[in-house]
Image (cartoon, rainbow, N blue to C red):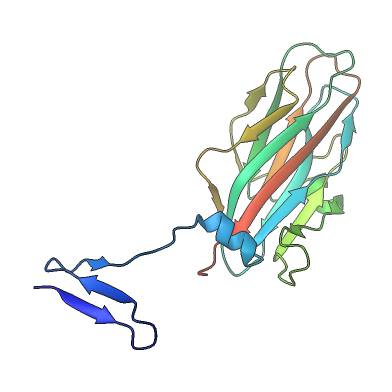
Length: 195
């Protein structure tokens, strides 16, 4: 037996079959596209930082102070040519760092709503670091190697979910012998809201 549901205003129908499945016509739209239209997608960019040593520097800290989780859709590391350096550089993350100079004296970064003009803001604390900034404590994630001639590295695999109250810090370690290299981090994320 099949049940048909018919709209009284425009005649559109939906059908429930004998296995309790609902059949309708629909428009499918990825969550990130819909989030952008609804003002829920944000862009975070660290300032360009010139690293003048081969030591690790934490360049960005982010904390979700929002009422919903964040879904990081894209994370891009941008690196310039290293002066004096040879070999690979590396990046790493620390989840929920508890201290360090990045947290105590970092500069505030304002996330940008990618639906330009939309009033929604991101409930966040985002800080950028300087040469030698540190992040201590928390859960370190193993470093990821970046080939030195790879000026842009995107992480676009499975989305990264940052629940409310969780924070992260991101670092770059230039190649051995580095005396000057520009670095930057771009993040595109959306708020995980029911739209």
